[in-house]
Amino acid sequence: MRKISAILFVLLAAGTASGDSAKSYRIKKVGEFPNFLAISPDGSTAYVTSWGTGELVVVDLRTKMVKATVPVGAEPLGVAVAEGGKTAFVACKQAGTVSVVNLQSLRVEADIKLPGAPCGVAIGSKGYRVFVTNFGRTKEGGLLHVIDIRDRSVTATIKVGLNPIAVAALPVTEMVYVVNGGQNQVCVVDPDRQTVIRRISVGDIPMSIAITPDGKRAFVANSRSDDLSVIDTATGRLQVTIPVGKNPRAVAVSPDGKRVFIVNTEPRTFSYLPADLSSLDLQSVKVEKGPTDIKIGPDNRTVVVVNEQTHSLTVTDVP
Image (cartoon, rainbow, N blue to C red):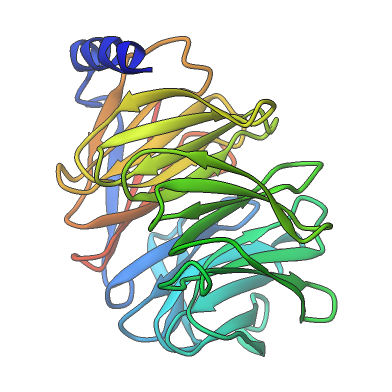
């Protein structure tokens, strides 16, 4: 693994480009200290959690303007869109709730109470389950909650480890991958059996995870070791480690599964490369100060980045 990583480092350094052909624009005043986002199924709208104001900010990507704000619980973090784009589930860390937002009326329909500090949110591929991480500061306190979308109730709570931050689910099987930032690992959870079936060591202080649409690979952004761990989901093993930019905070895969995108906080960039690793020509595009999350539109080329410290979004058309 070390030899592979060293070779990749040389090739990536040689192939890094400026991304000058990519066109970007900025959307200002997106709440206060925005953190995470989701994109509507048609790609027209971004939903951004505003940590400082306790709101979900609705941004029209066509007019490039903030359309509305919806008060949710205190310190909102993860957000995911479900029910064909009609509903958003927002994890509110300080409030200890998951706010269920009707995206048509722009009102909170329910607040699902959870113990501790809800953090990351993912929707199962079958469409009736939400998976929420609970940021426990001990191995016993780190939890994964399973919520039934239909009746807005918690159906299971599973111990996963120290500081679970991000979460993603495999298509078809809905095996859940939870990033334990305090243990430098990803644990794989069977939500039906309500048990952890595997633990996979990754880089230092992992922060984010994304899975390809075919479910074959999981990508984990490791913020302290400045690299990307690639997991083969069939074997449950670490496939390769790829050096990226300084302090990578978020990772996303395009809907067509062809490219993986990484946010690098300190150089204020996002980078991308083929998800099948057929090329190591890492392209980079400048964003604003404090980028924290990234999502790709359904056209596979609209890249939206949240910039926490400038309270803005950077929207880039990547060729």
